[in-house]
Image (cartoon, rainbow, N blue to C red; front, side):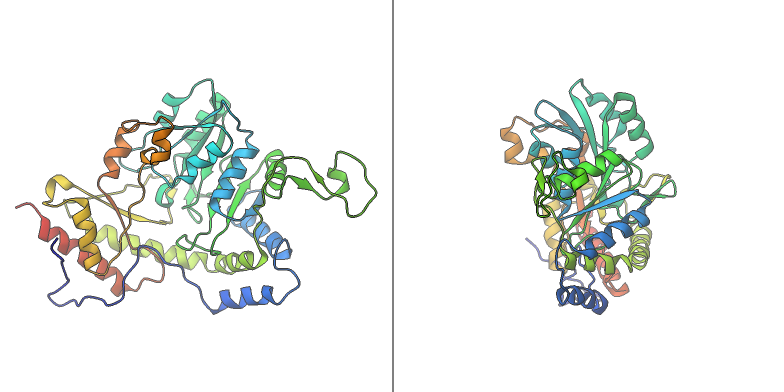
Amino acid sequence: MEQLAIEGGQPVREEMIWYGKQWIDEKDIAAVSEVLRSPFITSGPKVERLEERLAEYTGAKYAVMVSSGTAALHCACLAAGLKEGDEVITTPMTFAASANCILYCGATPVFADIDIKTYNIDPQSIREKITEKTKAVIAVDFTGQPVKIEEIRGICEEFGLIFIEDGAHSIGSKYKNKMVGSLADMTIFSFHPVKTITGGEGGAILTNDDNLYKKLVLYHNHGRVNLPEEMEEIHEEPWYYEQQALGFNYRLTDFQSALIDSQLEKIEGFIARRKEIVRKYNEAFAEVPELILQEEIAEADTCRHLYIIRLDLERLNCSRLAFFNAMGAENVVPQIHYIPVYYFPYYQRKGYKKGLCPIAEFVYEGILSIPLFPKMTDYDVETVIHAVKKIIEHYRKR
């Protein structure tokens, strides 16, 4: 394979530009250090404070902090009452956790196709997949762009389904001027290092529903209750607690909560920088015919977690693999988001076959995520743009 290297006035960087990267500063470190010196490093006041702040930030009534975005999805499915024999509609264009959480409960994932312009789940495809066994929809805000929330919520209300919004990518995004987090029956966030704000790991579930909130609290902490007024039996012993359900240890630590809380102080700056980089990319790539850019819906004000370019391979004398490797040779590290979930051997062994979602499969063949994170300098952004354009020029069909 030919290795391309930037030349002609712009030197090759010695340091790699990765597709995503966290931004941790001294205030973040100080916030964590303070907790590590305190009496409470888990199940303490920092967790409660963060739950209150996230609820306030998103406009949701409640927030429950958990150990990861995957744990958040699992808890949401448990709170929705999913069980064996139930079906849940979701998208294949996502990280596998969006479907795995359904299987954790014994239910069956049903994959709906995506919109070819936005790459988000297509509401019409959701409607076509509904059966008498359907109990919920897990709609993923792919790359940070909100799904068509109003339309999907209407479908869920029509058929009596629980609407779970997988907002792992979309904290800080808005739909019709309302923050993601307060618009579905339950919304989950992820605080993995490449997300807009991070706790190293961590997740949250947000809801406005009192009953769902009580279930989320129960399931994320071993299914147990401590307060006498919540117990099914009266006990005088001060040490007594009850296990009322089969829950899990999905608690978040106080030092992770302190880090996320500190990051939340900077979120508006992170959002602004991400939007600025997206604008630069959009302007640079708008007139490149070999690239197809993800479109955004008019109702959304999106904070992008990922920036995806889609290669029009009919216009290029190369494969996506060749393009991917050429980017690496320019010290720009891309990624693919995502392999359709049902392509994986585990799902194939469960009977899922390729061809279920033709649009998602077609889009997957050409997509490539390029670097997007607030710590990128303008020089980094120009380096990425230069690399993409140079590789396209090299492989362009004449």
